[in-house]
Length: 219
Image 1 (cartoon, rainbow, N blue to C red):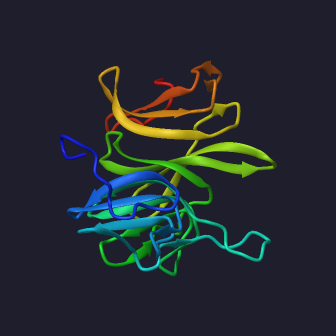
Image 2 (image 1 turned 90 degrees about the vertical axis):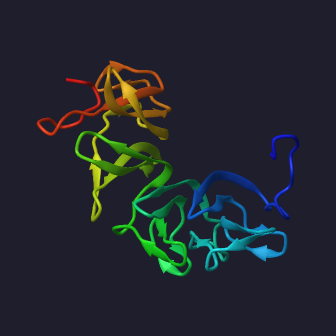
């Protein structure tokens, strides 16, 4: 959109785009697409003047009992601490072993603390009173049930946060905002209550000062 009309971006891509970000002055997209025109990009690409280009071969997902690799999925991406974080469902980025999340520095891919053992649906940068941190949310398949998962990256390791959301299902989206004058992580998904308290489809992880620990029910 140039302010007056819609314009195509090169050849576009071959399937769904689910995430868009600007990093280092460049436009990036992620989703569920193997190609842009005849170029293999594997679910993530960068705009270069008049075409979409691959990021070192893009992402990959090992086959699950089948003869062919599964198609990697990018659900979200954002910029944090001078890098582009890309998350979804994949196990390699540019040939580097990862687990559902990877860091792109503009020229190379790297692992993020061993990755995450669940499908990542959303990312957000949030300050709970202890400094900005990267949060990842999604769901883990456990005994045919989807269990909601929320994790916080402290710069060196992932900390899993007990959400106590019921019924066991998924966290679909997260965002940083203000609730009751407190910095909070807003959580949306397919749940009805938290800690036994009704909270259909939406709740908040309330931040606090350095003397307390952030929680989900405000106690």
